Image (cartoon, rainbow, N blue to C red; front, side, top):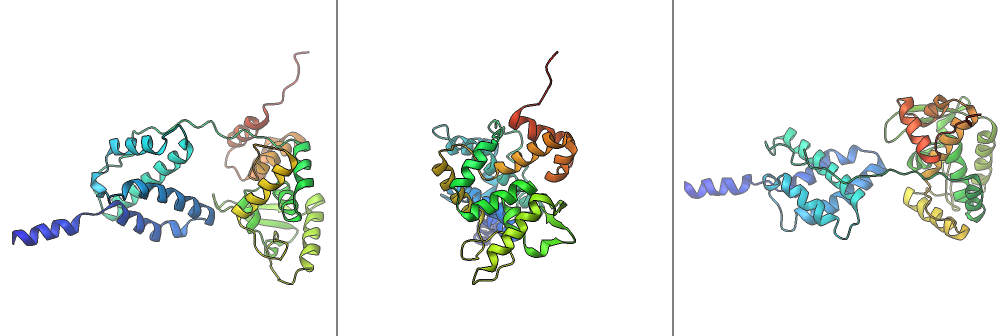
Length: 290
């Protein structure tokens, strides 16, 4: 009878890997593709620490989380990624509590992450042109579309011909699920016509707006590599493809004189979010005292 009790206790020990596997199968698969990819990288790091050897879930305490952050940032690197991994650990723990895997409080509560300064890069017009000249045609198409509509890389690369109807591009943001409509006019109308013309020469028929030279889909990572190659050829450092969204918003706010226009383009819920996003990039534009 005592032996049976011990076996039951052994079976009842739930490890972090077991819970993280359940979280992956029940939660991560329903997230946006880019978030799934990021969570996969974050989970790999968490398992590197909490699954070697397999850690019982209830053996993870606040001090354990602090020890993980210390281990993760040896050499003074990886602070931002460590913050994201801690956030995922917190989500997994809340999932575990909801499913009855543990009754312990979230060990991440009260454990401070590392300070983040946020991104403040603004791509100047001359930098944009230099990168564009050095880029291949796929990057040229993608950067023009990203700049004109002001959306995140994943959303730009996911747009299809079916999203263009009734004189607008219909967008559903992958990260926030916000719905937007961008009017097809001016340079954007000319760009869409250019994309249609280029795609007409491909042997492969693809409804995506942005495709490779062979008419195939381009991933976010694939675009990042192409972008990095163009930047290197142009001799420009420190700018990323995603910075085109901030450039679009900043330029929109300045050219229209109305921050709300940029807010609508970005899909932000408040003007204050957009103000922080744009002014951090280039600074608030003011007039002289006299």
